Image 1 (cartoon, rainbow, N blue to C red):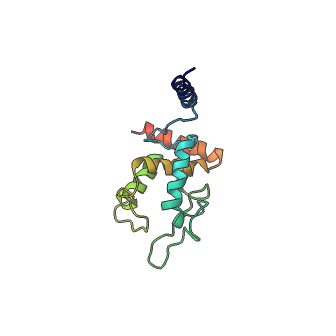
Image 2 (cartoon, rainbow, N blue to C red):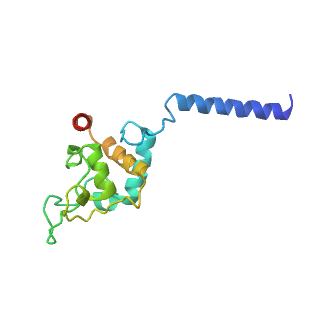
Image 3 (cartoon, rainbow, N blue to C red):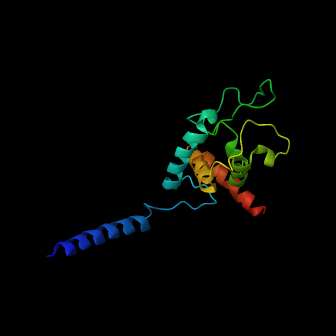
Amino acid sequence: MKPTVIILAIAAAIASVTIAAFLGGLGRQPQWGQADPRNTRQVALGERVYRDHCAACHGTDLEGQPQWQTPRPDGRLPAPPHDESGHTWHHADEVLFRITKDGVSALVPGYESDMPAYAAVLTDEEIWSVLAFIKSRWPSDIQARHAEINRRNEQSR
């Protein structure tokens, strides 16, 4: 057998395995416009982005800052937790996305917050991925309650 034929056969085999893995879900692409806590690729990207841009304030374990419900002397609230003990899961994905992208004041005009808008820093894909990562850390009952909030939000449009 000629070396060229062997190389082509190996390349074809690698391509077949890659395609089979992709079609089998191992290489499932994130669906942007939604935060899917079951999408391992989206969650992995979200974890990296969260560590780089969110963890300094919201905590490496999503625990938030101490006394996050008590205003500081400047009147602003500390960063809330994103785990199940906080209020993040009480908001639909669309709201969480807009807060992250455009800042809290985009939804609540005049609201003073240390949370910056990330529109010029993160892509939409990265923001959805961060939300997927956060949701992936919630217990299943909180994920289910949050999914219901998203369903009601979709129905109200």
